[in-house]
Image (cartoon, rainbow, N blue to C red; front, top):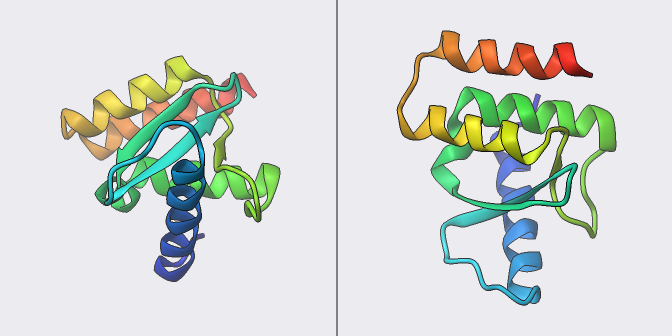
Length: 107
């Protein structure tokens, strides 16, 4: 599981990389990519959510911690949009777990 210190470190790298890319990211946000190459920008407060912590954990297991590259989540853009909608709707933990379960079943 990611510690708060590791999450902060990863988000800072994500912000640095986003700053170096063609599209700037507002302060207080981080960037993730999906397996199909889609780029998503989220507020740092989303790192506290269950679904993001789990996605970071799964990503670490599959790809290791990003050193000089972007954070890549082991899902497609459609899944990421569904996850973002759950967060914005402040959905229950049960719904977040159900969505994550669908990711585990697919892989």
